[in-house]
Length: 293
Ligand code: SAM
Image 1 (cartoon, rainbow, N blue to C red):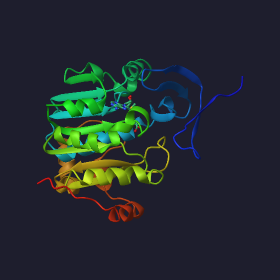
Image 2: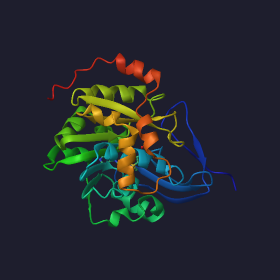
Image 3: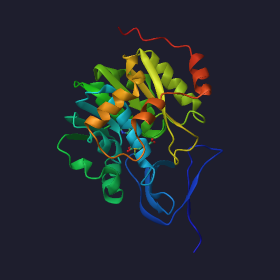
Image 4: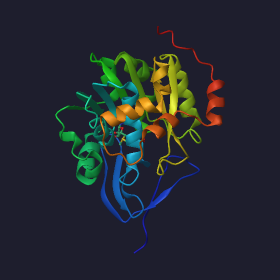
């Protein structure tokens, strides 16, 4: 039988491919093309509209870094908002924090949640049953636009700025999300790999700079997110958050201990150190700094 391969189409002129050992689910949902398949190197793999979303082998890296860096930097996050994250990995990690009393999760595609529960159960690991969760199937943009609630940490775990994810990289979304953030809150979002998607982090930096006093990025190396380090977007009005000493992060982590596979306090504090090519780009971006007091 001829071998079947899944070719990622994130970039027109470059890409990775996965040998498909077994297709578990494939369908055009109401919003995107969803496929989940088995691969001997990365376990179970989910892709949306031709772009790898998560794999059971390396999902821990991204989900731990997207959650524990903002939540432990904040130090007393009670209310968390997740935009996207349909596989449940972000939700799973957020719920490990005892300080978190409530999580609202806004996912546009119910099929991603349902198929992740069925075919990728290790990623959500029962998180969808947690009583602290309010799961809303809706467009994240609509939610933040109309939102009357406030949150301490907002994590946008979206697809790339194509299809339904595109709106989550706009001025409208970032400014509406800021209105949903409590005083002293932190936002973090998926923002591509800076080495190949420079335009993405440049645009994000420009947008966040007009809203927050301390926009920045932090790094995570995720094998199946091609292009080098993922440059996760970060923004808050409290610059001190990203400069907390490792002893502070270690004390907070030890006060609420849980198993991780990638995250630790040393990686947390070092993640904010950016490559020179990123620093040079950021230095040359004309930003209208936040007038927000
Ligand atoms: N970790 C992955 C990454 O870094 O690319 C993202 C994984 S997660 C599966 C992405 C989720 O964002 C998907 O479930 C998708 O349905 C959701 N999504 C895309 N656009 C959205 C929108 N406008 N509102 C809410 N969820 C959205």
